Image (tube, rainbow, N blue to C red):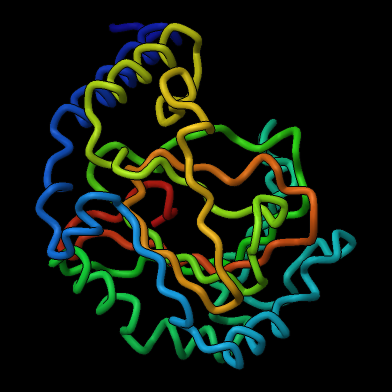
Length: 261
């Protein structure tokens, strides 16, 4: 009878999987859009018009009140990160957010997000879920630079529902071109292993000084390869940021574990 693997053995195995996945992370240079291939993201002002963005915000704004602790809608789960982790303590997510807002539901069903990504990447992508994310000001507990996964690639479309005009508003920040990096990410994974960190953390190797804040008015969309080194801005001091987030992955592949399928 074999014994259960030790915690150390599990860490070694997990690090090994991440190292292999990072080494085989291909395809980032071959996207249809040269700009997306180079940078790993695209900003589209007005992708959602101002009236639609305001309608979605009106449907979900009640959840910016910390005293609200449940969605009250079947199938929609309210998750405060402070209740399940030690960082990003001022972040709230609402799953299946299309059930909260008819306008957001229309956007989800329209196919516009998938078509936008097809134009940028040349890939057939499927939406695995859509959430609303609420970020209250936070300069102390923001998670550092990280990826969602090393391989297979996953993608996100963010729609700002509140104006994000400066670092003080808590923009999504990325290191341009880092979706194509392998050696630096291999070094980051090694550092994570040695310190017992999550193997998607990158702050052993990358610095926020390299990151660019992605700004925009309400309705601005950001399309991103989530192999980019990215983080919420740690200079968020002013106003509550609200955005919708669509999670995408390649059609015909298994949904990533973090989508909860």
